[in-house]
Amino acid sequence: MANIGLPELIFIAAMFFIGLPVAIIVIVTLARRGSTPQPYVSAWQDQPTHPIPGDLQGQAHALAAQGRKIEAIKLVRQRTGFGLKQAKDYVDALEAGRIPLTPAPPRDDLATRVRRLKSEGRTEQAVFLVRGETGMNEPDAQAFVDQL
Image 1 (cartoon, helix red, strand yellow):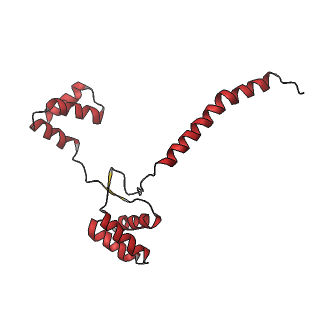
Image 2: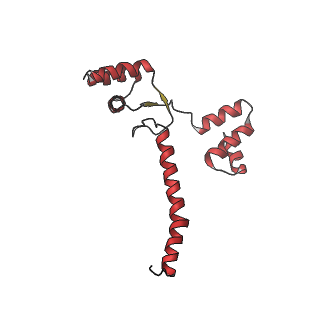
Image 3: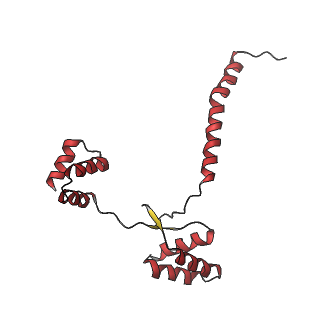
């Protein structure tokens, strides 16, 4: 039997107290990641998304499956107003079996939303909105709201 010295004991303890928890975390993370399919979001999509109507998805997918990809892209462009790259990305995602999503409608800017809240007499909520989106302290947020 070999002699186990202090360096070996430290290595064994480190593997037990550090390596084992790290391995467990990696296994749990991989298991969770695999359980929920993630929707496809292409590079042009950097905002919240919502799905396109199923009939368009079905029609575009059928055209692409028949080898009529250009017609599928044209259909998507006509029905959604997408640019060429967006429509191509969408059809490519359909062909690959991913769930393509479209960009959500643009949201009003902060000043517009604050003005709307002020006009409804909800000034305190406007201040909370400004603080939440900008990280301003309360006096600065109140001054911002008052100036609008």
